[in-house]
Length: 97
Image: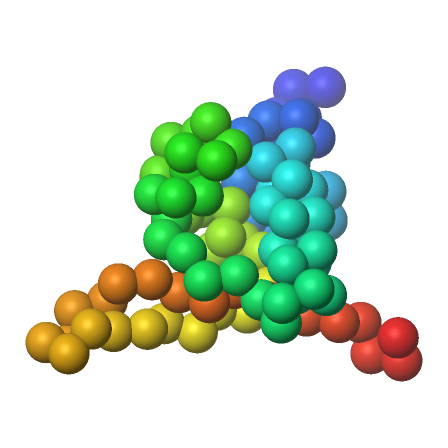
């Protein structure tokens, strides 16, 4: 249909009716697994982009949308000079789970 977003599109649009892109599903699966085993995953968006074979901007859009929807939370970490070095990403557990 015209204007309909593909579930496999990696544009990571906001407000797409609740569907997740393949990249979002892959990221969420990875973050959820790391959350279950290690309490989260600490990495840069560049590291995630390299791991998933995607552009950093795509990873940024996907993570932003996952955070906005409440699937993922991020905690920024900084070095001694105050520069951001990485974030810790965690999957948000469903209430009642």
